[in-house]
Length: 101
Image (cartoon, rainbow, N blue to C red):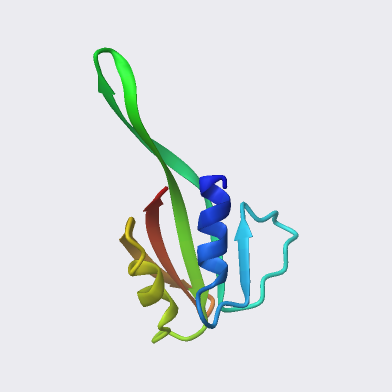
């Protein structure tokens, strides 16, 4: 299975999440709590002038009205997840993670 689709399925399986979207359009209506994610970067390791390993990095954002939501904790438990930052806009709390797949 494609690594992005595996990530999508893992995010959908998180308890309490209403919506999971990959690169949502501006017209997409989200039900909160929601997780939106997009391709952000990649990390490559080279040996003998050839790519040896490569990981794709996705920026995963948990959006919830509840500032004490347990959903960010569940995302942070993913093996390759790293917490980046959090912020609040218009009563919605955003928790941003970098996840490598």
